[in-house]
Amino acid sequence: MNAEERIHRYGRFGHLGLERMETLMEKLGNPQDDLEYIHVAGTNGKGSVCKYIYEMLRAGGYHVGLFTSPYLEVFNERIELDGEYISDDDLEAVTDQVIAKADEMEAEGLETPTEFEIITAIAFVYFAQKGCDFVVLEVGLGGRGDSTNIIKAPLCSVIASISLDHTDRLGTTIPEIAAEKAGIIKKGCPVVINTDNDDARAVFRKKAHDMDAPLFDAARVPVKITRETLEAVTFNVEILDHLYRSMEISMLGRHQVSNAAEALFVITLLVQQGKLELENRDIKDGLRRAKQIGRFEILGRDPFVIIDGAHNPDASLRLRETVQKYFADGKILMVCGILADKDVEDVLVNFRGITDQFIAAEPPNPRRMPAGELAERIAAEGGECHVCADPKEAVRCALEQRNDYDLILFAGSLYLIGSIRKDIINAL
Image: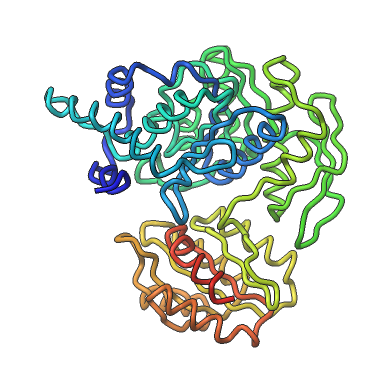
């Protein structure tokens, strides 16, 4: 078995907590204690915030690691260093080291690590071996009991937008979910939040106060969008008395401006604190070159073919707003597939705000909603839906009709988007 297959042998879920992770990392010599982190949590947007921070640091010449989840096409995407995914050889070697210690835990009668804990440990060992200057570390689930939360004193804790998702694990209300995310706030370490929800903001403020952690609210900074096209968005923003003009991002949508502003806040704060050195040109270059596959990613332009992993209500609303901005009068066909344990009703309300023409497909995941059931739900919302359960067949069916539409949009579960991205590219 290769590294990925061996990792997948471990259970996906255990109780939220750090006991297993602490034991595993102690057996590995606690390499995570040798690294400097920017720790990022949130419901939506945290992956984009990570990318912006990562690329700004890279533009400044730093040796930077990036840990994110989930992956879209290849497992190695989860662990990135200086613009390159971890190699298969390095992944195999580090996996050997980590699993050897997990086997020791099992032999000693201890609870074995989960799959995500194994992956997180691999990232820590790899980044430590490579001598990273900084690691941009994305939380997997929640924050408080997430395996990434074993780190002791990040340079900055960052919390992106908060909305309802993973309610079976994190809580059914915004304050409950915010409390889980607030678990990454550490004693005396600065925290940057970005939420327009007063309940979530109150949770973060109390936690920061209790931990004597300076709190900064990126949602309150004045941002002015000066230009929006299908190539880039340009904006001005003032952060900590520093005015940034004509900042440009290629990830589209007003929510991405908010994500970029939060990332820029983090970088500005760390520069002012003397934790790193970056020139304005590095910051600008890093923001411009930050990209994230599968997030309003344009794969074709005649007609437009776009993929987006909008898998929960908040993400689907952001997708709806962005499509309406750029394709207000366009004829749109949407291929969608959703996991049954998501808030399907609210997601579909937003999807119906985009178009009334659909193809229902099934993500390659055991939790998928059957395409026939999804089509019935879409019809109940007033949409017309053709059933095409197999993702590859759905791609073929949609692209055969591309001359009839201004936009072919593939959206929903990241499992769906990841499984068809290369098929779409190859067919265009």
